[in-house]
Image (cartoon, rainbow, N blue to C red; front, top):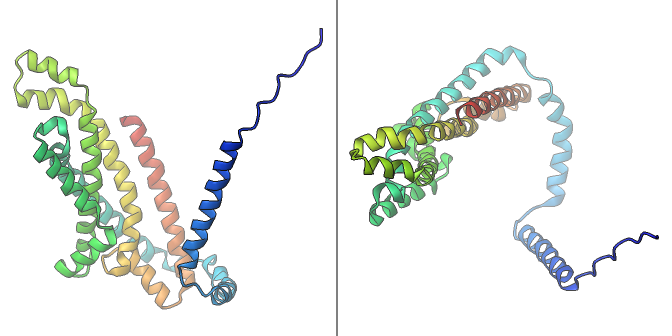
Length: 265
């Protein structure tokens, strides 16, 4: 008895042609996009070569005498992120309930809630920071407000999706047994949503720590202000230390928050 390999499947020329066409279209789109950007390649390569020799070695020689000042600014950034995230986690709860279609059961209110959340998400954190700097002045308070409002849009959307996915059987069983709205809320809905609400709030705090690091560049406090002055003064040793501290702190926060979220959900 001789063993034979199964025949190879025939090549589908139509599929191959589609893949080639998609690849060509993507390359053409990418090329067209770059051609639309005014880039002086010769100057860019020349600057990159010169800066690589002048700046990169200094970035890898951090100025350790600035460590206390850098840590103070980094702590201020974490405070901004924490205060903003906490405020957003609270503000997003009523907006999440308003935008969840199974909570209000009134299409107009649901549409209003979703529109408010979409309108908030339309503005990047840095734009919100500029607006709040104009409103309340330069300083960390503007950063806290920018993080709070910017995070409310995202958390409100995530909260509404959590509410729309709750187990309806529990709510219906409580309604059938004569429970009122308050009892259903505190004993049927909140126990289901608390773990995911907390998980999303902690995750948003991770994101806000990264976002807060750049808000100081425009005057909203935190380590971004130190980055701005290090850049103006060409103090690349201090810039290297700042970048190192940001990497370490953000990584530690990511690891801790990931472990906490694993235990919650």
